[in-house]
Image 1 (tube, helix red, strand yellow):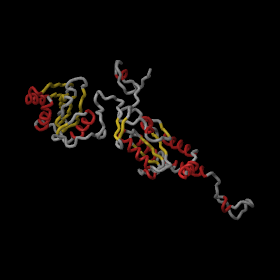
Image 2 (cartoon, chains in turn brown, green):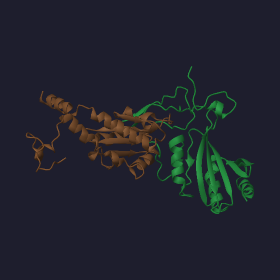
Image 3 (cartoon, chains in turn orange, yellow):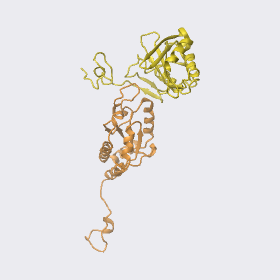
Length: 178
Length: 188
Protein backbone atom coordinates (compact mmCIF):
# COMPACT_ATOMS: atom_id res chain seq x y z
CA UNK A 1 0.00 0.00 0.00
CA UNK A 2 1.67 3.17 -1.18
CA UNK A 3 -0.36 6.34 -0.77
CA UNK A 4 -0.23 9.31 -3.04
CA UNK A 5 2.55 11.53 -1.62
CA UNK A 6 0.80 14.76 -2.70
CA UNK A 7 -2.02 14.35 -0.20
CA UNK A 8 -1.36 14.50 3.51
CA UNK A 9 -3.18 11.76 5.35
CA UNK A 10 -2.04 12.60 8.84
CA UNK A 11 0.49 14.99 10.29
CA UNK A 12 2.53 12.19 11.88
CA UNK A 13 2.17 9.77 8.99
CA UNK A 14 5.14 9.56 6.67
CA UNK A 15 3.50 8.02 3.66
CA UNK A 16 6.80 7.35 1.91
CA UNK A 17 7.86 4.92 4.59
CA UNK A 18 5.01 3.82 6.70
CA UNK A 19 2.88 2.40 3.93
CA UNK A 20 5.55 -0.27 3.46
CA UNK A 21 6.28 -1.01 7.09
CA UNK A 22 4.73 -3.89 8.95
CA UNK A 23 5.10 -4.34 12.67
CA UNK A 24 5.39 -7.94 13.78
CA UNK A 25 7.38 -10.29 15.92
CA UNK A 26 10.54 -11.77 14.50
CA UNK A 27 9.21 -15.26 15.22
CA UNK A 28 6.07 -14.62 13.23
CA UNK A 29 8.01 -13.19 10.31
CA UNK A 30 10.49 -16.06 10.22
CA UNK A 31 7.76 -18.64 10.50
CA UNK A 32 5.72 -16.92 7.79
CA UNK A 33 8.68 -17.10 5.44
CA UNK A 34 9.45 -20.68 6.33
CA UNK A 35 5.94 -22.04 5.99
CA UNK A 36 5.28 -20.47 2.61
CA UNK A 37 8.44 -21.73 1.03
CA UNK A 38 8.72 -25.37 2.00
CA UNK A 39 10.98 -27.09 -0.47
CA UNK A 40 10.16 -30.79 -0.44
CA UNK A 41 12.61 -33.62 -0.71
CA UNK A 42 10.49 -36.16 -2.60
CA UNK A 43 11.34 -39.56 -1.15
CA UNK A 44 9.15 -41.52 -3.56
CA UNK A 45 9.41 -45.22 -2.80
CA UNK A 46 6.16 -46.76 -4.02
CA UNK A 47 2.73 -45.93 -5.43
CA UNK A 48 2.35 -42.91 -3.09
CA UNK A 49 4.99 -41.25 -5.24
CA UNK A 50 2.53 -41.27 -8.15
CA UNK A 51 0.06 -39.30 -6.05
CA UNK A 52 2.90 -37.03 -4.96
CA UNK A 53 3.63 -36.34 -8.62
CA UNK A 54 -0.05 -35.68 -9.24
CA UNK A 55 -0.06 -33.23 -6.34
CA UNK A 56 2.81 -31.37 -7.93
CA UNK A 57 1.25 -31.21 -11.39
CA UNK A 58 -1.27 -28.85 -12.88
CA UNK A 59 -4.55 -30.28 -11.59
CA UNK A 60 -3.69 -30.00 -7.90
CA UNK A 61 -0.66 -27.72 -8.09
CA UNK A 62 1.18 -27.78 -4.78
CA UNK A 63 2.91 -24.54 -5.80
CA UNK A 64 -0.20 -22.71 -4.56
CA UNK A 65 1.16 -23.59 -1.13
CA UNK A 66 4.74 -22.68 -1.85
CA UNK A 67 6.01 -26.24 -1.99
CA UNK A 68 6.59 -26.75 -5.68
CA UNK A 69 10.38 -26.76 -5.62
CA UNK A 70 10.97 -30.48 -5.58
CA UNK A 71 14.64 -31.16 -5.85
CA UNK A 72 16.41 -34.46 -5.44
CA UNK A 73 18.96 -32.62 -3.41
CA UNK A 74 18.63 -33.00 0.34
CA UNK A 75 20.89 -30.01 1.02
CA UNK A 76 18.34 -27.63 -0.49
CA UNK A 77 15.27 -29.17 1.12
CA UNK A 78 13.08 -28.27 4.07
CA UNK A 79 10.54 -31.05 4.23
CA UNK A 80 11.02 -34.70 3.42
CA UNK A 81 7.90 -36.34 2.04
CA UNK A 82 8.33 -40.07 2.60
CA UNK A 83 5.93 -41.42 0.00
CA UNK A 84 5.74 -45.18 -0.03
CA UNK A 85 6.84 -48.45 1.48
CA UNK A 86 10.13 -48.20 3.36
CA UNK A 87 11.85 -51.54 3.13
CA UNK A 88 14.65 -52.36 5.51
CA UNK A 89 16.99 -52.33 2.54
CA UNK A 90 16.02 -48.71 1.84
CA UNK A 91 15.58 -47.55 5.43
CA UNK A 92 19.14 -46.49 6.16
CA UNK A 93 19.34 -44.71 2.79
CA UNK A 94 16.27 -42.65 3.78
CA UNK A 95 17.91 -41.91 7.13
CA UNK A 96 21.07 -40.84 5.39
CA UNK A 97 19.23 -38.43 3.09
CA UNK A 98 17.41 -37.06 6.13
CA UNK A 99 20.71 -36.49 7.92
CA UNK A 100 21.98 -34.55 4.91
CA UNK A 101 19.09 -32.07 5.07
CA UNK A 102 19.94 -28.83 6.86
CA UNK A 103 17.95 -27.60 9.86
CA UNK A 104 15.20 -26.56 10.15
CA UNK A 105 13.61 -29.61 8.59
CA UNK A 106 10.31 -31.39 8.78
CA UNK A 107 9.01 -34.78 7.73
CA UNK A 108 5.69 -35.86 6.27
CA UNK A 109 4.91 -39.58 6.37
CA UNK A 110 2.64 -39.96 3.36
CA UNK A 111 0.36 -42.96 3.32
CA UNK A 112 -0.16 -46.07 5.38
CA UNK A 113 3.19 -47.70 4.57
CA UNK A 114 5.38 -44.76 5.54
CA UNK A 115 3.29 -44.18 8.67
CA UNK A 116 3.06 -47.72 10.01
CA UNK A 117 4.22 -50.28 7.48
CA UNK A 118 0.68 -50.43 6.14
CA UNK A 119 -0.42 -53.80 4.88
CA UNK A 120 3.16 -55.02 4.76
CA UNK A 121 3.39 -56.76 8.09
CA UNK A 122 6.43 -58.70 7.00
CA UNK A 123 10.10 -59.36 7.44
CA UNK A 124 11.09 -56.95 4.69
CA UNK A 125 9.33 -53.71 5.62
CA UNK A 126 10.16 -51.11 8.26
CA UNK A 127 7.04 -50.67 10.38
CA UNK A 128 6.81 -46.91 10.03
CA UNK A 129 9.48 -44.36 9.13
CA UNK A 130 9.04 -42.80 12.59
CA UNK A 131 11.21 -45.63 13.91
CA UNK A 132 14.14 -43.88 12.24
CA UNK A 133 13.35 -40.19 11.79
CA UNK A 134 10.96 -37.81 13.60
CA UNK A 135 7.68 -37.33 11.73
CA UNK A 136 5.64 -34.12 11.93
CA UNK A 137 2.57 -35.07 9.90
CA UNK A 138 1.11 -38.49 9.17
CA UNK A 139 -1.26 -38.78 6.21
CA UNK A 140 -3.62 -41.74 6.07
CA UNK A 141 -4.62 -43.40 2.83
CA UNK A 142 -3.36 -46.10 0.53
CA UNK A 143 -2.34 -44.07 -1.35
CA UNK A 144 -3.72 -40.73 -0.09
CA UNK A 145 -5.45 -38.46 -2.57
CA UNK A 146 -3.54 -35.32 -3.55
CA UNK A 147 -6.05 -33.30 -1.52
CA UNK A 148 -4.97 -35.27 1.56
CA UNK A 149 -1.32 -34.47 0.90
CA UNK A 150 -2.18 -30.80 0.48
CA UNK A 151 -4.07 -30.86 3.76
CA UNK A 152 -1.09 -32.53 5.40
CA UNK A 153 1.08 -29.75 4.06
CA UNK A 154 -1.33 -27.14 5.43
CA UNK A 155 -1.25 -28.89 8.81
CA UNK A 156 2.53 -28.69 8.70
CA UNK A 157 2.29 -24.99 7.84
CA UNK A 158 0.03 -24.48 10.85
CA UNK A 159 2.59 -26.26 12.99
CA UNK A 160 5.46 -24.15 11.69
CA UNK A 161 3.41 -21.00 12.29
CA UNK A 162 3.28 -21.77 15.99
CA UNK A 163 6.89 -22.83 16.41
CA UNK A 164 9.18 -20.64 18.56
CA UNK A 165 11.85 -20.50 15.86
CA UNK A 166 13.83 -17.50 17.17
CA UNK A 167 13.67 -18.72 20.74
CA UNK A 168 15.06 -22.04 19.58
CA UNK A 169 17.90 -20.29 17.80
CA UNK A 170 18.58 -18.17 20.89
CA UNK A 171 18.57 -21.24 23.08
CA UNK A 172 21.01 -23.00 20.75
CA UNK A 173 23.24 -19.94 20.82
CA UNK A 174 23.23 -19.83 24.61
CA UNK A 175 23.90 -23.53 24.81
CA UNK A 176 26.90 -23.12 22.55
CA UNK A 177 28.17 -20.19 24.63
CA UNK A 178 27.78 -22.05 27.91
CA UNK B 1 3.22 -81.53 -28.58
CA UNK B 2 4.31 -81.51 -24.97
CA UNK B 3 2.85 -84.99 -24.35
CA UNK B 4 5.18 -86.46 -26.99
CA UNK B 5 8.09 -84.63 -25.42
CA UNK B 6 7.29 -86.19 -22.05
CA UNK B 7 7.47 -89.63 -23.71
CA UNK B 8 10.78 -88.71 -25.35
CA UNK B 9 12.21 -87.59 -22.00
CA UNK B 10 11.01 -90.84 -20.40
CA UNK B 11 12.62 -92.92 -23.19
CA UNK B 12 15.91 -91.09 -22.93
CA UNK B 13 16.26 -90.86 -19.16
CA UNK B 14 14.38 -94.01 -18.16
CA UNK B 15 14.36 -94.70 -14.44
CA UNK B 16 15.73 -91.29 -13.60
CA UNK B 17 12.36 -89.80 -14.43
CA UNK B 18 10.50 -90.04 -11.13
CA UNK B 19 7.04 -89.24 -12.44
CA UNK B 20 5.15 -87.34 -15.08
CA UNK B 21 1.75 -85.74 -14.82
CA UNK B 22 -0.79 -84.14 -17.08
CA UNK B 23 -3.25 -81.73 -15.53
CA UNK B 24 -5.61 -79.69 -17.71
CA UNK B 25 -3.21 -79.79 -20.63
CA UNK B 26 -0.18 -78.88 -18.57
CA UNK B 27 2.66 -81.38 -18.58
CA UNK B 28 4.99 -81.86 -15.65
CA UNK B 29 8.04 -84.12 -15.51
CA UNK B 30 9.74 -84.82 -12.20
CA UNK B 31 13.30 -86.04 -12.54
CA UNK B 32 16.24 -86.88 -10.31
CA UNK B 33 18.43 -83.93 -9.37
CA UNK B 34 21.48 -85.66 -10.88
CA UNK B 35 19.99 -85.56 -14.39
CA UNK B 36 18.10 -82.28 -14.03
CA UNK B 37 20.61 -80.28 -16.06
CA UNK B 38 20.78 -83.01 -18.72
CA UNK B 39 16.99 -83.10 -19.04
CA UNK B 40 16.80 -79.32 -19.40
CA UNK B 41 19.68 -79.31 -21.90
CA UNK B 42 17.91 -82.06 -23.87
CA UNK B 43 14.65 -80.12 -23.77
CA UNK B 44 16.35 -77.02 -25.08
CA UNK B 45 18.64 -78.49 -27.70
CA UNK B 46 16.60 -81.43 -29.01
CA UNK B 47 13.01 -80.52 -28.23
CA UNK B 48 13.17 -76.81 -29.01
CA UNK B 49 12.32 -75.24 -25.66
CA UNK B 50 14.19 -72.04 -26.33
CA UNK B 51 12.91 -69.93 -23.49
CA UNK B 52 12.74 -70.18 -19.72
CA UNK B 53 9.87 -68.22 -18.24
CA UNK B 54 10.26 -68.99 -14.57
CA UNK B 55 12.30 -70.83 -11.99
CA UNK B 56 10.81 -71.31 -8.57
CA UNK B 57 11.23 -73.56 -5.59
CA UNK B 58 9.06 -75.24 -3.00
CA UNK B 59 9.74 -75.96 0.64
CA UNK B 60 8.14 -79.24 1.73
CA UNK B 61 9.11 -78.61 5.32
CA UNK B 62 9.25 -81.86 7.27
CA UNK B 63 9.66 -84.04 4.19
CA UNK B 64 12.86 -85.51 2.87
CA UNK B 65 14.11 -84.27 0.46
CA UNK B 66 13.00 -80.93 1.71
CA UNK B 67 13.05 -78.67 -1.36
CA UNK B 68 11.87 -78.94 -4.92
CA UNK B 69 12.99 -76.96 -7.94
CA UNK B 70 10.44 -76.01 -10.60
CA UNK B 71 11.37 -74.89 -14.11
CA UNK B 72 8.83 -73.52 -16.57
CA UNK B 73 10.06 -73.75 -20.14
CA UNK B 74 8.34 -72.88 -23.42
CA UNK B 75 9.08 -72.78 -27.10
CA UNK B 76 9.52 -69.31 -28.48
CA UNK B 77 6.34 -69.60 -30.57
CA UNK B 78 4.48 -70.62 -27.37
CA UNK B 79 3.20 -73.85 -28.91
CA UNK B 80 4.66 -76.06 -26.19
CA UNK B 81 4.96 -75.62 -22.46
CA UNK B 82 6.75 -77.99 -20.11
CA UNK B 83 7.27 -77.95 -16.37
CA UNK B 84 10.31 -79.78 -15.02
CA UNK B 85 10.64 -80.50 -11.32
CA UNK B 86 13.39 -82.03 -9.23
CA UNK B 87 13.60 -82.77 -5.51
CA UNK B 88 16.51 -81.14 -3.70
CA UNK B 89 17.83 -82.19 -0.32
CA UNK B 90 18.80 -79.70 2.37
CA UNK B 91 22.54 -80.03 1.84
CA UNK B 92 22.42 -80.39 -1.94
CA UNK B 93 23.16 -77.81 -4.58
CA UNK B 94 21.59 -77.49 -8.01
CA UNK B 95 23.43 -77.22 -11.32
CA UNK B 96 22.82 -73.77 -12.77
CA UNK B 97 21.07 -73.55 -16.14
CA UNK B 98 22.51 -70.14 -16.97
CA UNK B 99 24.67 -71.91 -19.57
CA UNK B 100 21.47 -72.93 -21.37
CA UNK B 101 19.28 -69.86 -20.84
CA UNK B 102 20.92 -66.56 -19.87
CA UNK B 103 17.55 -65.46 -18.51
CA UNK B 104 17.87 -68.01 -15.72
CA UNK B 105 20.42 -65.77 -13.98
CA UNK B 106 18.14 -63.61 -11.85
CA UNK B 107 15.59 -66.39 -11.29
CA UNK B 108 18.28 -68.54 -9.72
CA UNK B 109 19.53 -65.64 -7.65
CA UNK B 110 16.01 -65.15 -6.33
CA UNK B 111 15.70 -68.85 -5.44
CA UNK B 112 19.05 -68.64 -3.69
CA UNK B 113 18.05 -65.47 -1.85
CA UNK B 114 14.59 -66.52 -0.72
CA UNK B 115 15.00 -70.28 -0.22
CA UNK B 116 18.73 -70.71 0.31
CA UNK B 117 19.30 -73.33 -2.38
CA UNK B 118 22.83 -72.91 -3.76
CA UNK B 119 23.62 -73.23 -7.46
CA UNK B 120 26.83 -74.55 -8.97
CA UNK B 121 28.17 -72.91 -12.11
CA UNK B 122 26.20 -69.68 -11.66
CA UNK B 123 28.26 -66.68 -12.84
CA UNK B 124 27.15 -64.25 -10.12
CA UNK B 125 25.37 -65.94 -7.25
CA UNK B 126 24.57 -63.04 -4.95
CA UNK B 127 21.39 -62.20 -3.09
CA UNK B 128 19.02 -60.25 -5.30
CA UNK B 129 16.33 -58.83 -2.97
CA UNK B 130 17.83 -58.94 0.51
CA UNK B 131 21.31 -57.61 1.15
CA UNK B 132 24.55 -59.58 1.32
CA UNK B 133 25.00 -60.64 4.93
CA UNK B 134 21.32 -61.04 5.76
CA UNK B 135 21.42 -64.26 7.77
CA UNK B 136 18.04 -65.83 6.91
CA UNK B 137 16.12 -67.25 3.95
CA UNK B 138 12.71 -65.64 4.29
CA UNK B 139 10.53 -67.91 2.14
CA UNK B 140 11.42 -71.08 4.02
CA UNK B 141 8.51 -72.54 5.92
CA UNK B 142 10.30 -72.32 9.27
CA UNK B 143 10.87 -68.57 8.86
CA UNK B 144 8.15 -66.55 10.61
CA UNK B 145 6.18 -64.05 8.51
CA UNK B 146 6.86 -61.36 11.10
CA UNK B 147 10.58 -61.72 10.46
CA UNK B 148 13.55 -62.05 12.72
CA UNK B 149 15.77 -59.31 14.07
CA UNK B 150 19.10 -58.82 12.37
CA UNK B 151 21.60 -56.00 12.17
CA UNK B 152 24.38 -55.16 9.74
CA UNK B 153 25.81 -51.81 10.80
CA UNK B 154 25.65 -49.16 8.05
CA UNK B 155 23.93 -51.56 5.65
CA UNK B 156 20.54 -52.59 6.98
CA UNK B 157 18.71 -53.97 9.96
CA UNK B 158 15.46 -55.85 10.42
CA UNK B 159 12.93 -56.08 13.21
CA UNK B 160 9.85 -58.07 14.04
CA UNK B 161 6.57 -56.88 12.52
CA UNK B 162 3.67 -56.64 15.00
CA UNK B 163 1.29 -59.24 13.64
CA UNK B 164 -0.79 -59.94 16.74
CA UNK B 165 -2.68 -62.60 14.83
CA UNK B 166 -3.83 -59.81 12.59
CA UNK B 167 -4.63 -59.64 8.90
CA UNK B 168 -2.83 -61.60 6.21
CA UNK B 169 -1.93 -64.39 8.60
CA UNK B 170 -3.22 -67.86 7.78
CA UNK B 171 -4.71 -69.70 10.73
CA UNK B 172 -6.02 -73.22 11.19
CA UNK B 173 -9.71 -73.88 10.70
CA UNK B 174 -12.19 -72.04 8.52
CA UNK B 175 -14.00 -73.59 5.62
CA UNK B 176 -12.42 -71.44 2.95
CA UNK B 177 -9.67 -68.90 2.40
CA UNK B 178 -11.88 -66.09 3.67
CA UNK B 179 -12.25 -67.96 6.96
CA UNK B 180 -8.57 -68.80 7.24
CA UNK B 181 -7.25 -65.42 6.17
CA UNK B 182 -9.70 -62.73 7.30
CA UNK B 183 -8.96 -59.12 6.45
CA UNK B 184 -9.06 -58.32 10.15
CA UNK B 185 -9.23 -60.38 13.28
CA UNK B 186 -10.37 -59.49 16.77
CA UNK B 187 -7.66 -60.33 19.24
CA UNK B 188 -9.16 -61.93 22.36
